[in-house]
Length: 86
Image (tube, rainbow, N blue to C red):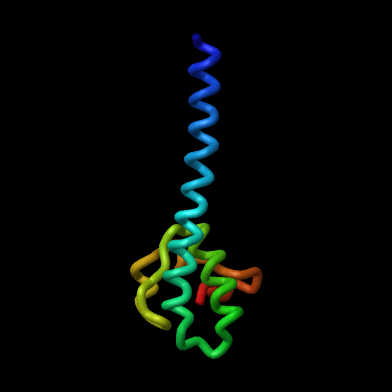
């Protein structure tokens, strides 16, 4: 009985993490597409926006402004100390 319950809980945990990752990817794709729509280098913008979104679980709303909406996104830096997120 206990083994079946433990197995059920582990399977539920694995499945829920899979669905959470899928929903995060959809959210990040949608938000980054909107944020990078007017960027000069769209592919690069999408790449870094998606990385930042997955780490921070948020993306500021406008293309180049409103970074105050997501402090993690705003404060992430690259190895040179410059802002990593577009």
